[in-house]
Image (cartoon, rainbow, N blue to C red; front, side):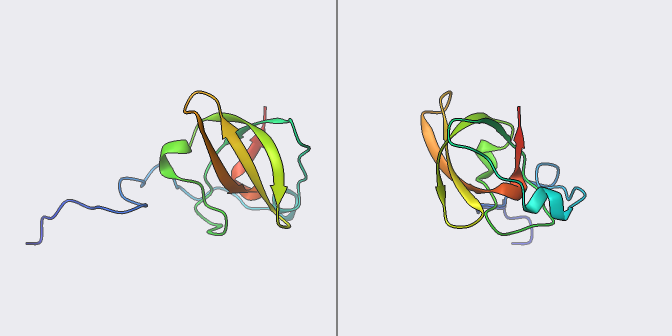
Length: 91
């Protein structure tokens, strides 16, 4: 039973959730409603981590939810995600 297939929300994410450099500037960056952003997961910051299927997608910010999280809609997937600002990069 040692060779079971991994199942879960972090399965098959060795390279997607790789830790990048984390700075205070990245954590405190503000985005405006309507901005285009790229979802890039940062493995060093676990709060607001996006779904693994959304990593690499370009979306638009719908609204701010809380202090450092944003509701983002991805047109190509026809879905919306709640993502922390440490995992976003402006286009």
